[in-house]
Image 1: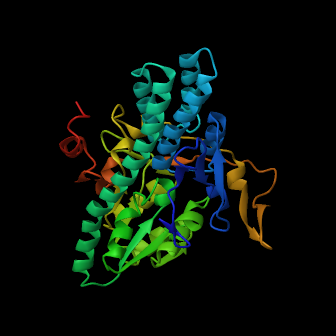
Image 2: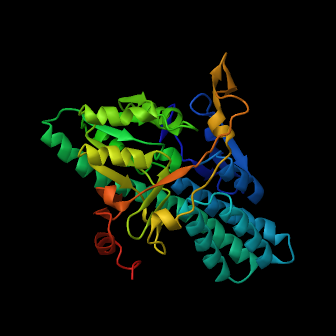
Length: 369
């Protein structure tokens, strides 16, 4: 996507010959645009764990690049395979909920194991890191092409009036390598001249909606309005929301979905008000081994200080401010589970399906037994 008229991906090698991995450090957005350079596996683990980068697709791509860095470090170690496995475990344990991370690491491990010679392992790991990133971009493009049909249909029913779309968290290009999942159909609709307006949930406690999604939409020129997280239900009751699209960090083979905390409540409100609720995801976000999201998907519990403090711009400086009584306890679950029964459909790179085994299997027959 464009930032000040320059195209960026969210992760890239500094140059074709460089081993330095560049990322957009999302902690400083929307106030400062900072590019961070990463040269070690530990730095990549820190970037993932401390949310210098975040979002299912981007975490997967970062893991792919991280595994390439692992081959460089393993080359200096006499126990190459043991070093690779250690790095892989570090990456896997950096964020537990987003399955794209595990998918990318396993993809790299499989490719590296089939290569002979350290030089060959390094080469294949670098090529695969780039391939994973490119696949992510292409999947998001296809999600946009498939998902825009829903927006077009709503626009037609409204005789060309504005289609109001509610989002939660950030599933835009900052959460992937480019384009995004939940935002891809929105960008596609906007570029086709369909009148759209986006209600942007602030998404406490890290404010990925008000800080990241709004910044993206502003750069793209898409009309939007930031709302408090708990305002969504009111807007739905008043007929001010035509559809909801969110992303996902893990989706079971039965359609249950893990996404940022608060997604479940939006799905309940949408169901109560007969508003379509869609999940947009690339196939790498499916966890084909899981059948029950509530009991099987691990939910990350993050630092309580993310709830107790907020960071914002004050006197041109990023400042951390205490919101709560200093001695009060806080609990910070990063995700919740939206059951398949509340989901209207899944928008994927292959098409749109219902959130059930039969429909998912028709779209992805090679994955489900």
